[in-house]
Amino acid sequence: MPQVGNGELGRPSGIPEQTSADLTLRRIQKSDVKPEGPCVWKFVRDGKVLPEGDQNPGEHGLLTIPRVVVEASPGRLQVEAKWIW
Image (tube, rainbow, N blue to C red; front, side, top):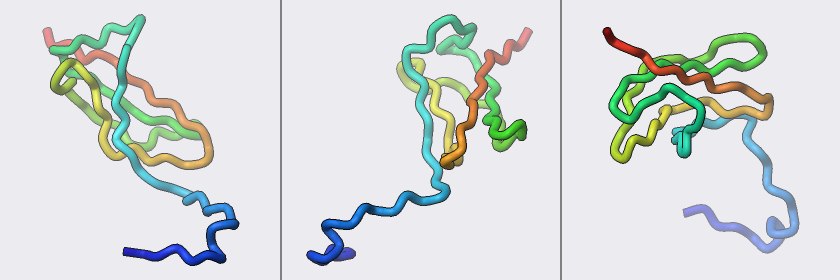
């Protein structure tokens, strides 16, 4: 396990340029996303679609989007219900 020295305690920590995280959407309002139905999602940053995919809500109807790349520049997660007729 890495150790932190006394000289490092007063310095600010660095922020990584990029990391990834699983995003869980809770309290979805004004949406046609249903707990039992599949969804299609995409992540858009600077006008470019980055990852995209299909995802079903999991236990308790929570929708988790896996491995979304998080950077300093803002992005937009777009989620829509994928209806199968």
